[in-house]
Image (cartoon, rainbow, N blue to C red; front, top):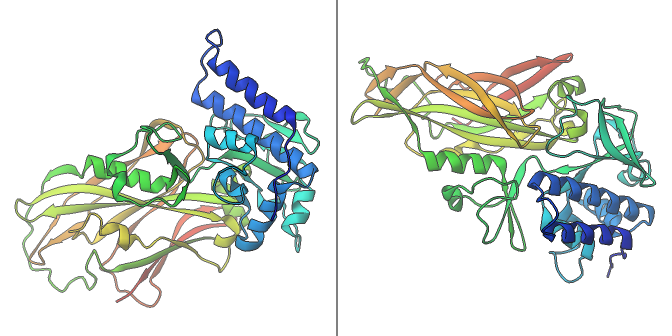
Length: 418
């Protein structure tokens, strides 16, 4: 049975120092962001010391990569089992502070036929990327060299340099039992109880950010647009795919590495976090009124798995649609947001459509609707597309070019099952 190496007394002493100072009445209270930044630096130092001694954190990463091919790991993934008696004190303290901390290896620097273990041996800088810092807005980033010396490095991502990046998981948030806020400091939506966590570790439940967004929307309910105009006619048979049954699978891909670089900062790799929001309208046949709602799903996948002929899957949206039910719209507007940060920013992206609707397969209407996707600081709107489900479904469906970047761009494919 493997055992964890004892970590340096200095690292534990530093944690104790911070913990004591936080409780000192004469010491200024720290914000969540400041505490998180300190913990990220502590995590970086532990990883460096463990790497130098070929300790258990290094070994655990090698084991996980061999099983999953992942190149980024949550701090809780680096303990052999659930957090417990055998977890080193320093790691247990950091997990208690923020279980969303992770280490990632931006994979542009991986060489042909290079093993993950060989890559670990070649790391030149351990970069600390906190929630407040956007690499595109600063000239330098805090880092440590392989010997643990603190340095400032260029924020321009260099594909020839071997980086390890210590940051907060962008694709997930977490909730501890008995707490009123998420680990990222957000109010927990009431409707979250109707959704399943993506992972549970001890008293911590992890949720995809898209799940939290959907729970928030479910709390708010659909947005009332107003009465619609009767258009008459009998559209029965005009659309061969009922709205809540026709959609089976979506996939996206980047045409090449250059396209990835347009929307994703190198320091945020290897995974790309795309949030895909579907906007739709629903007509109440009893009073001919229209409401608009939205559902978000997400991609959290290594960029190389969305490159070339290998399409990266997006969760089956039909399963999420059924949580709302009763949808008759034939046209959806789809927005693609690449998330880089966790901080809310002013405004968002608004887009509108004038879809046609069928109600009870007896009469049809058309009315313009619009919806605003809230943005986070550093987010990019990668593209948008209108999907008309009454077009003919042939084979694998239709491929839409969502945006052009680099030598080509990103494509979005809808698949059908007649």
